[in-house]
Length: 159
Image 1 (cartoon, helix red, strand yellow):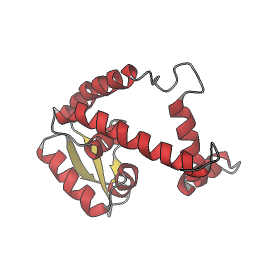
Image 2 (image 1 turned 45 degrees about the horizontal axis):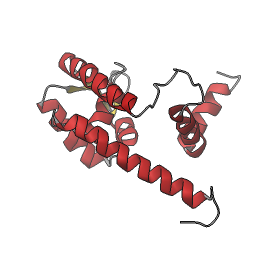
Image 3 (image 1 turned 90 degrees about the horizontal axis):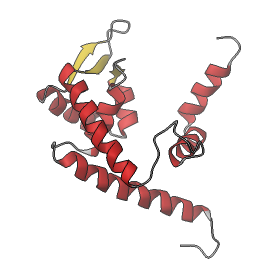
């Protein structure tokens, strides 16, 4: 791509290629359960048990709202996800995992982690501390304006 090693174009190409190959690998793991990578992203976000507004789920799953609605409808039909009106802002809908969704997420999470371990990708928080996941999360934090605002808000002494 570039004659200069480490050029920005090389970083973009490498990240894109790695994402595609990893998605293909994890997609094969999830295919046995008829789940897509996008559905897996939704289940992972909702696994914290907090319930998330659909707009947040859309952003985290990298899906447009209409596509997310169809996907969540499918997950609801499979009894993995349910929706509720937000108790604070009744105009918003929050999505949650069902009990079955929590069990399925835990089971699939083990399979996904095993697949990543085969690649030698350590889990977050496991040495080496400078692992790939931490480095990419740090890069995303520096590139994503929403995360920059969250970080600035959290660091504000007026909170």
